[in-house]
Image (cartoon, rainbow, N blue to C red; front, side):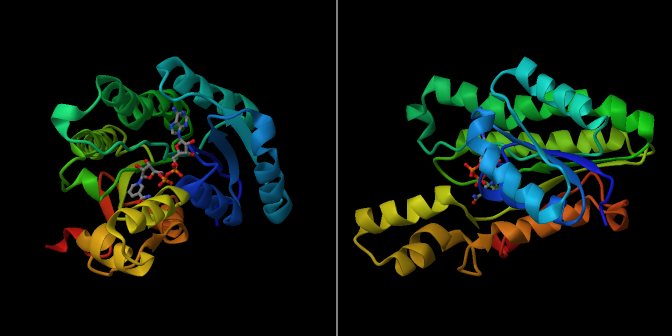
Length: 260
Ligand code: NAD
């Protein structure tokens, strides 16, 4: 379905990014994996995806807290693949603390990675997409792109920013065969969240099952984690020909979190 398409997925060595990269490759796209660690650390992952899909995936390392490095990541992908059709801005960080106790450096880091990197990669990717008259940009925002939670003010601000940025970009390129959407998941089971379950179970002295239902998934009516593969399937749809009119939107996959 996506055969011949060239894709870059930021933060794709774990969690949602890895699932999206795998799903795009399984749909036939050639995927550039990205992470913050040296290539040797990601080689097993890259080789496994290559063996499974035969799509010749690559891997690049870049620190997205640095704007020049974010632009460089897109430029290196363009050079390696000869073009770029699909950009998935997935890399992101979280830090939970009251606003008046939130460290300045975490605020700056979160803005840089969750927001500024999306600007820099998009800026670098658009000229080629415009020239070829086809492109797909999927920005992994969050339910926190639309609603808020206490102790997550900076994260909520960055994800609202990503939703707004996605809308404006979509308007600019609406007539050029390029779509840009924000994909907004609720709680997704990733290594990051698994660790929270174990930690919270200890703190609350509750079995993990009750921690999931009563503490972590208090806001998510389905009372189960969304699997990364579910988010990945939605991303693949947004990259398809069938989704060519889906643009400028914030797409929810949130287990009815924002329904009330
Ligand atoms: P994760 O920690 O597994 O993935 C985040 C990725 O970002 C990692 O691969 C990491 O290497 C990369 N990254 C972080 N800082 C970087 C930097 N400075 N330079 C380069 N790469 C960097 O977590 P995840 O849950 O898979 O999160 C992926 C995205 O989904 C994030 O944007 C997150 O905000 C969003 N999200 C997650 C959930 C959830 O419940 N897990 C829900 C909604 C949205």
